[in-house]
Image (cartoon, rainbow, N blue to C red; front, side):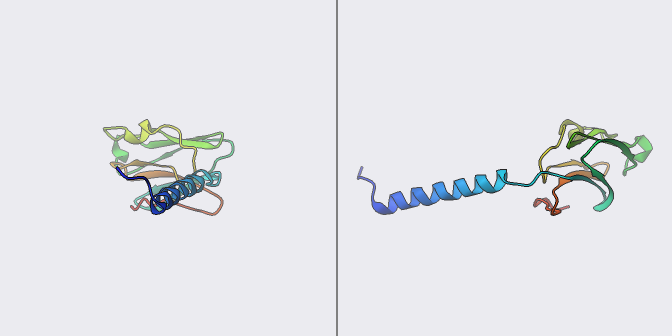
Length: 124
């Protein structure tokens, strides 16, 4: 095995810089200010993350019951949903900007957005 050359060290340094920059970008996100609730891609509620709120939304499975969304102390969650697998309920409390919980059978999503209205790359 031959010794590492200058080009090898440059590739390693570039990789470390990209990794550090990505980490700083990810952790440097703004604090979320509101929870957006969407049904079929349309915003049906915008809840400030200050205080405590609890709302019920009738989604696509309304005949089985509403989807209940809770906001408390800067975080939000889907507390209950009539869907069979409960993946969105198991997601738990969301507290980071861009976090999202999707209740596919009910066609309801909950997403935390920052002051600039930023969103992640999830497409509906």
